[in-house]
Length: 168
Image 1 (cartoon, one colour):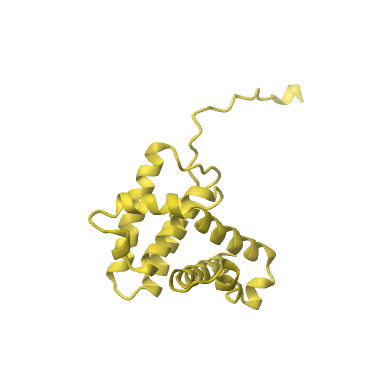
Image 2 (cartoon, helix red, strand yellow):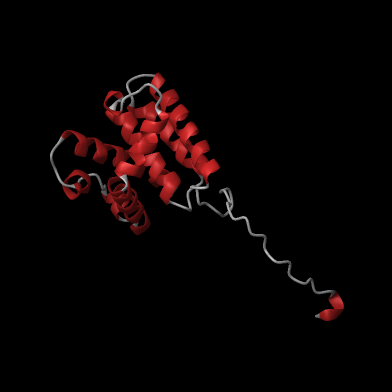
């Protein structure tokens, strides 16, 4: 699934780029990007649709975080690809509890290296995501739990009584 997810993330960037440059609907912008290979895996298709829809639905909130942390950069000055990579990674950080933050950030950096025109893009994406992630973590807005994920719960699990051999 990892290779699928990278390809899916790349397809999402392409769909977002299309939406940014053309007046078209989401289905038209994204439909042609689902390859037969991805279409065979219902989990891959679900991930593609859910992540893309979440980015679109929460674009205003996501862009607010980008604006707040892109020091001295107006949103209009950020390259379209970089902006969409940031949006995708933030949607994962904020709304996909099962994806570790490191994975979202590392995937964004790798995709920035592949799709962006300058070496500075991946560093820019890394810096912005790192600043936003630290801010979200401090404010308790990252809700992740499980192996390799953040656990923000302040409650401790009650101790269970340990049975001794003779109790069994």
